[in-house]
Amino acid sequence: MTGVVALDGAIRHYEWGSHTAIQQLLGVEPNGRPAAELWFGAHPDDPSHAPARGARLDELIAADPEGMLGAHSVAAFGPRLPFLLKVLAADTALSIQVHPNRAQAEDGFAREDAAGIARDAPDRTYRDPNHKPELLCALTPFDALCGFRPVEATLSLLASLDVPEVAFVADLLRGPDPLRAAFTAILTHDDPAPMVDAVAARAADADDGPLHAVRLAAEHFPHDVGLVVLLLLNYVRLAPGEAIFLGAGNVHAYLRGTGVEVMANSDNVLRCGLTPKHVDVAELLRITDFTALAEPRWPSVGGRFDVPVPDFSLTRLDVDEPTGLDAGGPCIVLTASGSLSVDDVPAAQGHGVFVPAGHRTTMSGTGQAFVATVGT
Figure: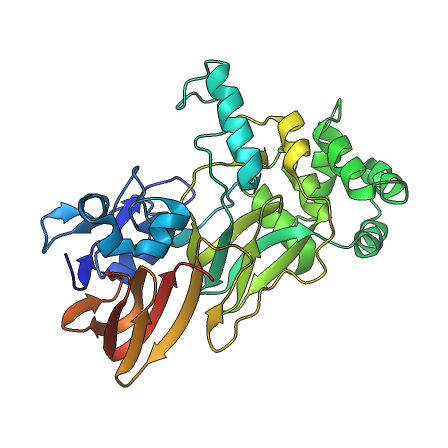
């Protein structure tokens, strides 16, 4: 099988999703139901449909893995697409979370299988044996938290807040292994309600900076210990075109906005706040990276975001004349605005195409495209 394949995305309806953003992208009327994510890929939970082929993308890949993915990708990742491309649209905060590296995922997946924990059980942590690095590029102003703020900056923030209930956090940040100690103490606090309420009250009128992040999260999680965890994290408001990379062990949360996200093909998430779901504190502490992150934004070069994992890379392109695309590996092209074609295959706004490995194509039309492919 050769040639470009038109794709329809699969909509995921989560309560935190926007009631308008993905609908507007697709040019459909809102129906009152939130649309949180629009998936493009071959993930078994919701593979993209290829209407002209009368099949799903995962079925097309299974029928001809090397023809679709290329021999290099099959050798490196097996006969599956190693990445998933999404449009993510959040009206409310997602959980604070961390993802494992590959070795941790393989170990945890095997342990939980051996323990007889069903793979769909609510207290199951490892759904598969793969890691889940992610990169998100903003389409609109996007509020997020990404990695631990440097200790001195957090000490300055806590001093300016002058909230006695979290004075113990500052004390721990002045001691050994400061971020691990503070993070652990917050999550295992015997009586978190007073400190959570005090931090939420202090943030009630904030319209900028780290307390603004707390206020956004508190709108839907007013009594969650995650509000205090947020004080340790870098708050960033991404402008359209800016990105963050979330490697293994990075503590992060999305608060509000619309963006394009690409990730390794995994569903492993360990949560630590802003959620009613299962929180495994011991495992969370085992996989979290307690290195401070001085700069949360991830740079691009010529619109390309290269990341330190081989599963994916992402390129943002503004197209206003015919533009060549040399797909060394498998690619998914998503039209984020305007109307584009890849070869002779239309890709309207909110739709995509799959380009098989080794296939040279030309994008034409006018609009903005995101190209996801395997990394180097």
